[in-house]
Image 1 (cartoon, helix red, strand yellow):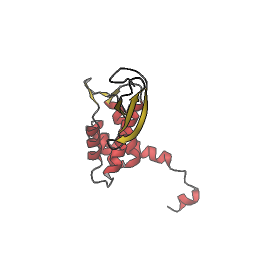
Image 2 (cartoon, rainbow, N blue to C red):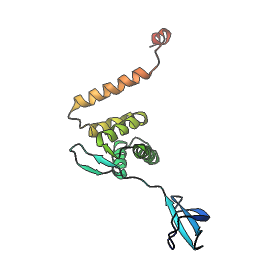
Image 3 (cartoon, rainbow, N blue to C red):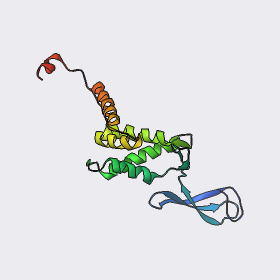
Length: 166
């Protein structure tokens, strides 16, 4: 850390503490050359993510838009808002960890669907209908059949004894 007074590059930390609701660290430093004291703040730097839309336009990632879309898909499903916010946190963290700073809206939509599949089938279908731009009942049926096929694959094979009880 460079001293703001003499520009010397070495200093020692006298005191550290959390500030701004634990979003940053406040450090009180002393320059090893001029012995003057100064304060620095450390924050996590989030590199902006650019979303490439279907029409080719680019815009900054907007967490609130994503959360709004997921909340709309989950209306009246009984899923707590805190769970939806943590889902958005997970998706945003996944995007931040990528080395690429541009991501297509298609990739984000697929991440949402992947998470909603395990959370609520109803929310999954609602989100898919908007995201994939369903044109009619056939699109709903195809998606439901695909979802049902995945569920059947995941279920254990029934034994003959259990099958006879039906």
